[in-house]
Image (cartoon, rainbow, N blue to C red; front, side, top):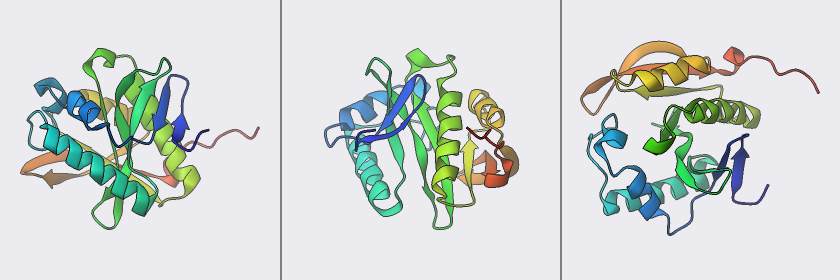
Length: 176
């Protein structure tokens, strides 16, 4: 893998962002469909996208993990996904894909690969994820990869559904 390539699945490549990628981040979060379940529930401004991009660079530098740029096999930008710090004690799985690829199993593919990657790197004993209570598709993804529901979490005034995964919850991989 190249220095920029973080992780690869059959259909996706997770790579570190480039300095000029704020426009991609803003494009990803430019509609109500792609932001309705995010804190603030509004399309992102170019300034917010640039701020988040800077934050992802900082997270990668300090923790060795962040939300990465996802590109399809053909090199097309399809979203972001990764595991980054949530507070000082926990890590959090998060993802967001462009609308055109919804319903194709890419979120599940990304989340499953990230869980394996996280535990292989031994970044922590577990991580959490949370979703807006109406985001049934994301809840389905989290359950499908083996996360279990835990007590809800209050984020920006919304009582979100919370999930967790620990290393002992991952199925054993066969020896090769």
